[in-house]
Length: 323
Image 1 (tube, helix red, strand yellow):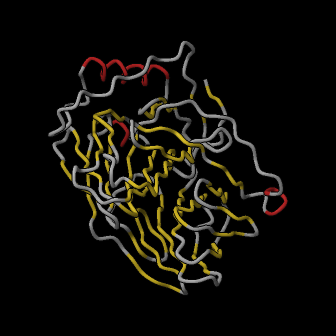
Image 2 (tube, rainbow, N blue to C red):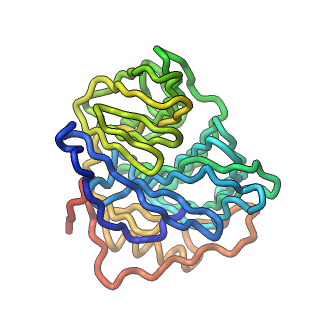
């Protein structure tokens, strides 16, 4: 999934700091993606650019696509990241320059590791379900993984369990003694949480992780702060337990990891460490080098936008600028 725009300023809603200084409610913003899809972009934002190594969060749908093509994202490149795709409804066909051609459906996970460079496309198949709803996430890769070979993995079976009125599906990482089969390169967790009723539910956390919560459907409340689709609730570090309440049928996404301390340059579809690195990736993409050709997708690749007239700056996870 491609990134297309600059980031607007965000402000902390009144009252959040008084409830819990470590929690910040971050409203997302709508971004058109291709001709047919609009996503809610929840990360990065100016005041919070990362949660652990999670550096990008797009939530899309639920959209009625019965009479529309659905998702149509033509071939485009990535460097320095993993893409993590999770669907609640619908179907997307992933194709990449490794030769992978893999449909993904609800309850399944696609993880693509770009390493030094990969290209892919994402499209709804011609005969697709009438509703599309899901998230796409990016994970920043550390050295040496970001300079390594690209990879793709599809996981049809993930750890799932119920505990104290909470249904949990573990996408990546570890939680509650369970481990996902997905390969990650920093301490990380991503899990779907589905409270069975209106009673408070609890989940163990790691105090060395920072966490964020996304409501994909329904709404929830944590320490007196309510959040709904279109919001990301940042929880900070130092917590040993998550206790929350949610409306019936809510589907929440818990993201967490150890704070990622390396400043990043994120521009278009590239995650790097310097202006020069990103500029070189752009030049290679436009020249047809490095990224390969996406399998079984005859559509012309997306051209990269022009670089800004000012030098790209590296930013840390809290938004601080580094030369």
